[in-house]
Length: 85
Image 1 (tube, one colour):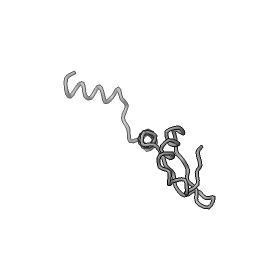
Image 2 (cartoon, rainbow, N blue to C red):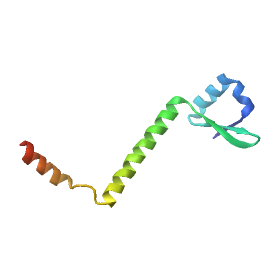
Image 3 (cartoon, rainbow, N blue to C red):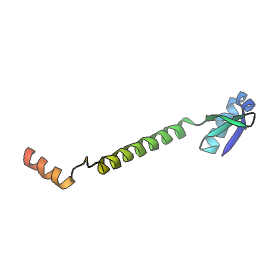
Image 4 (cartoon, rainbow, N blue to C red):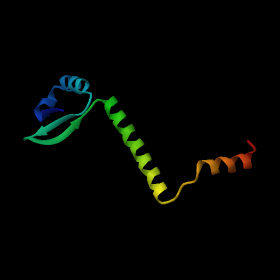
């Protein structure tokens, strides 16, 4: 985990380098307390993709718990009957 004080944000080149080296977020503090998180765009996009996937999985599990799903074999059989494949 990389933590830097707010005053270090002035050196944007160094911040960019730290983000790339850390391959994760850089936490920025002000008066010893967390204030900001800075991260490389690739890391951000990967993190957001993982969150989206986790959300979809959670929604699917909720559907199963509520009984809002169908048996795959039944669905395939109905589609084969309806569309003739």
